[in-house]
Image (cartoon, rainbow, N blue to C red; front, side, top):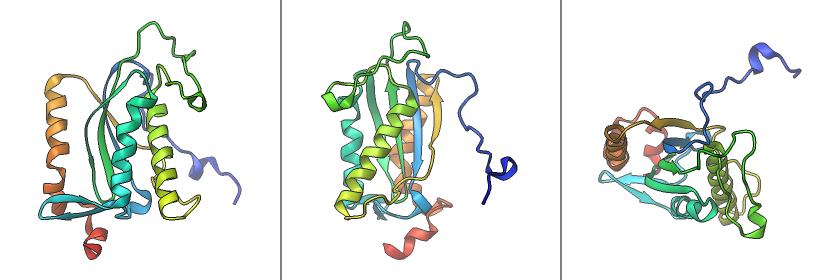
Length: 184
């Protein structure tokens, strides 16, 4: 099929003219490819992680070890998606056009990443780890892209933390959960 800009155009879902390298807290949501319930299931309103869900948790916890100016906050692995809060603490002196990065191959931390670089690392590493576990090279784990919300104040941060903490309790009302019930 030839490229047709009318049907193949992908719009950015990022906030226009926003510098996603700047310091701040960001709430991210990443969905599993085809919304498959890959990471476990909900039992008695609690998330029960399987080996793949545990792998996602493990990779999430490694993010600050790879990025020197990134902290992780509240997070939850759900059967078919992931929610987490990332806090970027990039110095204001970094120009957006000149990121200060060091190769991870040398073991050095990446400095002053964009939000997209952090999410890409998380998705790549968790996919690689899960695919190694299931002997499935090249299989997609995550859908393309991710959703993000810029957390602008403490009240919003508190609301999002509460949302993350109570997400398994609300699973039955989740419009995307119906394809997961038969496995659990």
